[in-house]
Image 1 (cartoon, rainbow, N blue to C red):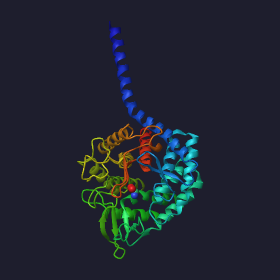
Image 2 (cartoon, rainbow, N blue to C red):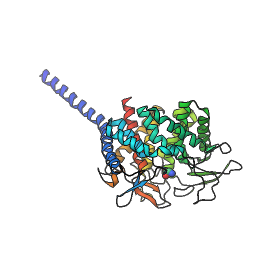
Image 3 (tube, rainbow, N blue to C red):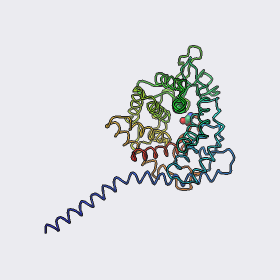
Image 4 (tube, protein in one colour):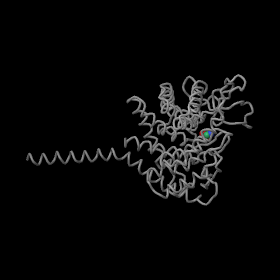
Amino acid sequence: MNRVFLYGVISLLLVLSACSHKQHDSFEDVVDEALNFACEQSLLMAGSLKDSHQKLPQTSDRFGQLITCYPAWWVSGFFPGQLWYLYEYSNREELKEMAQLYSERVRDQQFTTDNHDVGFMIFCSYGNAYRITKDTSYLSVINNAAKSLATRYRPSTATIRSWDAAPWNKQWQYPVIIDNMMNLELLMWNARQQNDITLMDIAIHHANATMKNHYRSDYSCYHVVSYDTISGQPHLFQTSQGYSHESAWARGQAWGLYGFVTMYRFTKDARYLEQAEKIASYLLTHPHMPEDKIPYWDFDAPNIPDCYRDASAAAIMCSALIELSTYADARKSQAYLEVAKQQIVQLSSREYRNALGNNANFILKHSVGHMPNNWEIDVPLSYADYYYIEALMRYKNLINE
Ligand code: GLY
């Protein structure tokens, strides 16, 4: 009788342990399934443009047909970067070959000095290429890109200028957009790699000016701050891609969060961590943050909840929150990871993910590029895919550690 009881208890424990493993495994399974799917979908995308000289994926039209861009467009580095991440994940030679092929297409952008996007273009592509392969031939590309970006810094404003002339808004004397926080990683990485204090100073000055001038008291941010070129002081606080000057454009909030997390990684300056946590708190407690944690395209869009979501904002935010969780105290860390996991589950669901071979072989759907201009509304975007894959890889690295 005792033996029967003992067998019963042991069986129950085995079942419970299997169940708890199953539960534990299930989120990891979501991540692995998502990365495996991303490998297949990205190989289809890569194959479809293999022989199209100088073209890179941008988005799709409303019929699901691929829209490409040339290397000088700001999104060009995301697809090569995505392929590098997937090569890192899978170790598949064909992904490496495609990552090399598409990285070559953006190589010349290292010399871009007429806008700030050189950081996006070169650090997402060549930054990952070097990190993963340690092939030193990539280093000069990354070093040159940092030098190009640094040419856009003016001590009088203590910021890097985002755009030169903006024909659509002639009032802006010296526009700096929140997106520019993303390009500081290129400077900080090079500063460390080359022991170049000037690059570090530029990044720190830019981050400090952004913290002071872009952010409102509730830790939402303006999209565009224009500086007066004579006084060096901000003279206009506006938007270009958001709903209104005073609204909180979702992707802009995500760029800012990600940027300050990155600055904390390099500097360990507590002010950047605090800033990132305040931005995260603004986002996580916002009454317009949907249950599934995929933001509307603007937190102040007038027709919420009947308006478009922006999967790209969710993917950027998700990747940033995973990194932030590694710096925060245990309570906050858990809260950040919970949201990031929810975002991964949602983005990996049929609601947000395309089927294999569909929608021009992009991974995610439902992003918004530029609502006020009526461009890229409710479509896939190459940067949504890039930051989603980065988030998946960051999560994997986190649990492996
Ligand atoms: N300008 C970059 C973006 O659309 O977020």
